[in-house]
Amino acid sequence: MNDHLRQALNNARLQPVDVAAHLAVDPKTVARWLAGRTPHPRHRWAVADLLHLDEADLWPHLAEQHRTIPDEVQAVYPHRWAVPQTAWRQLLQSATHRIDILTYSGLFLAEDTGLLHVIADRARAGVRTRILLGDPGASQVATRGVDEGLGPEVMAARTRNALVLYGHLSGVNNVEIRTHQTVLYNSIYRADDDLLINAHAYGTPAAQAPVIHLRILGPSAAATTYLDSLESVWASAKPWIG
Image (cartoon, rainbow, N blue to C red; front, top):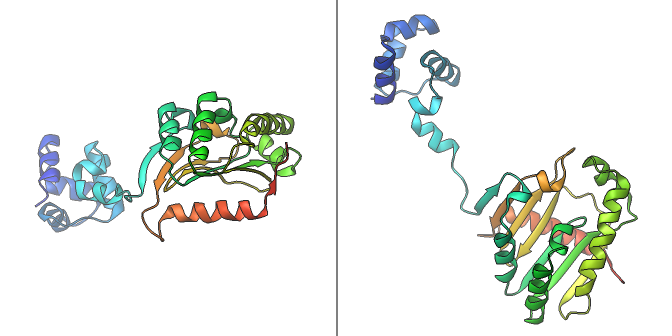
């Protein structure tokens, strides 16, 4: 029995025959829906419109199926600026063996002296730290600036500034800094098995784009796709000499 649908019809003071007439279906079809059969999508949407309700109000089990989120997804933030500063600090402080930063500038992190101290402390504790920033002279960096609506020179300048700030870590044991000339579709911030993935969207600055927090839970997890991408960029990048 679909009690949700039956109650909605009662509230709207409609009979099954009224629904059948509105949708141009056999009344027996509506009776089967009330008995528990799930209609085709076009009929579900039509019934929901007729009753001025959401499809999920009438067939909650479908909403549960559609909203299934893999365990590896820890959080989704609508914008990078919406990620709490404490989340960045906790991510980096939690690292026991790996920290990876892959971006064009990552200036928002580099300008936080406290976070740079956290990275340095973890590196001194033996955490291998790799920082991959865009080559300021690369066409890919200029193009990204245009894509974000900032202009080619602005992104190149941001990258140069970031290299100066991250460069303060270059003398710390276990820290390596490289520059790349890669087209990035995401920026990746990793601490051991946790990754914050900042999507790149055309016409949108990275700070406005969404961030997904993933945790590596197995070899076939989505997070491993981003790790493979990171390793590919690292392999082709050049060591930075400040």
